Length: 98
Image 1 (cartoon, one colour):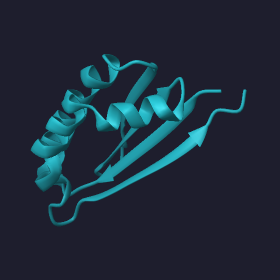
Image 2 (tube, rainbow, N blue to C red):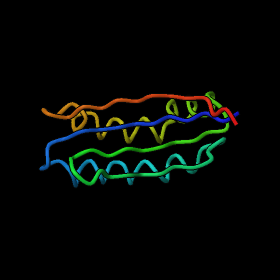
Image 3 (cartoon, helix red, strand yellow):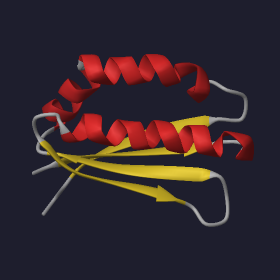
Image 4 (cartoon, rainbow, N blue to C red):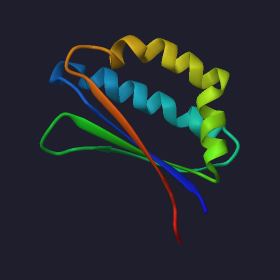
């Protein structure tokens, strides 16, 4: 069974481009990690919210990516953005059942 993490972020309109840029920068980092399967990056039509669907071979592969030096670097650069006024970030994880 694979492991899925879904991250959602809501933000004020003036942060849309910055949030989008961070998300796009995360994609190549994830793709270089062992156990990576797929990623999808979505923008809602009627509000300022993005959703990223990350799929890994296992939960451990996901956790290893989150602990990697590359990931730490991008999080260090984006932490202040994620803590900006009006920004709400949530992450839910799932085991794929099929």
